[in-house]
Length: 171
Image (cartoon, rainbow, N blue to C red):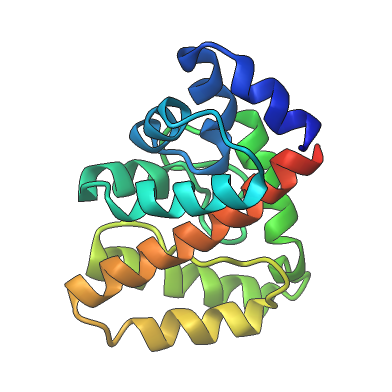
């Protein structure tokens, strides 16, 4: 069994929830996941994480969304842990273009998205360029509100999985 998971399985529930919170940003997710311990291995943790995430109400999803900085920025709209912000920066590294025009286009598109959907654009940015992210953002602008909420939730699920893997690996 993974050493980080073994240690996490032994923590009290509040400490366990606090430790895993940066992986998602939703307190409800972290508390429910911590309550399901112990996990035998990473696969069991990942499966449980998905089940918890998909079973949460929209306000819990929004809390997770709010813990992210906009693509290309370094601070979140609301609460975020230092670990979460560090991971966001790593995930966006490829998207952080030195090209001023690309930055401006992404910033303008982010504002249009926020005006339309009332939240920041959530995308699993790991390995994606600014151009790829801009294309995804523009394509998702044609979604209706319900479809886009579920797409944002799916992107958050992917981010959470990526971060859980990093957390277990100590990165």
